[in-house]
Image (tube, rainbow, N blue to C red; front, side, top):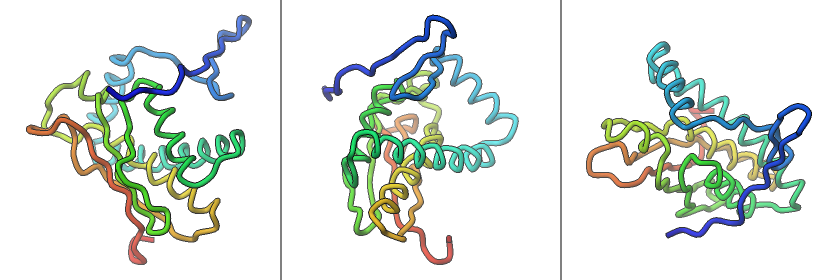
Length: 181
């Protein structure tokens, strides 16, 4: 069993009811509530369009989070990526494990165990965790930019535990090609 870092500090403002963790306002909702809303939007927009929207929003959010956390904790490089994986793992999405990361080449591979999407939706035969892909590229690109690299990346989900014969999700981060920029 993977051992997580100590529990997240959650502060609740007694006057406003606002929850904060890592100095960021948070929302605390049941898993089924979030995933039912996610599925409803996917059905309305189509999975491909919704995945595109989530990729860009997740990329931007991951960049911002990594930038602020790197500054707050005075960390850089791979330590920022690992800190991000730890925090994601502590928030109920599943356990995110960095299997490989190479900042010089702009590559990483992340394994997802105990996916909240798979727990809620089951074996659908689809890559259900596409919402996370932009997170990994956004985190990688912020780290690369902070290190002075002009290299930028793209992420994709290559496997999901929701697919037959698969027990974990796999995400790959690779450099953008000149054609994709």
